[in-house]
Image (tube, rainbow, N blue to C red; front, side, top):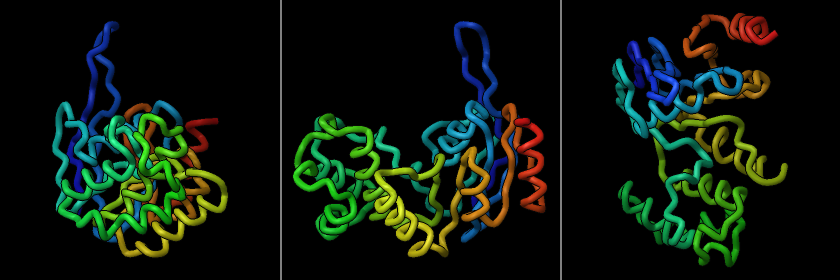
Length: 217
């Protein structure tokens, strides 16, 4: 179970305190896929960072009783001076995974070829995302965090990502944040809407979509 209880997050800026999330409550059970709809700037990425543990809430409690991934295809934690393979080895050691047994998968899946032996600072944003997604699949988390649509590479590579995540790991919990209700409908069991820092939950997915459209009309 992942549980958020009265979670609030604000940042101190030059123009004063900015409240990004306010009094968020959410439960996610093992194997459950929860979609969170929100337009740009609604606080989706901040919410994902709080759930992952990358940031701490200003108030409230985040409880994680299952292992939680970093946001998929996020390469911000890479060490830029290390090669792709060395970043893989570093991350595998953190999660107590044998890196050498995972290298063939990352090579085949990322399709980066010789670039795996080059420093990550030489990568394009797309190459970083492909490496990050491949590495995300070598650690078997209980819950995967997906920040926006995994639009990594071309349509063929995108299809590979969908198979690896939604078919091979169909029994894992997932939290998907997006502004695309079609994507949420295709992959989630239930939906909530994040609007102006507040989370609105619904028992019926279509009600959530209707609310989202009204708020963004």
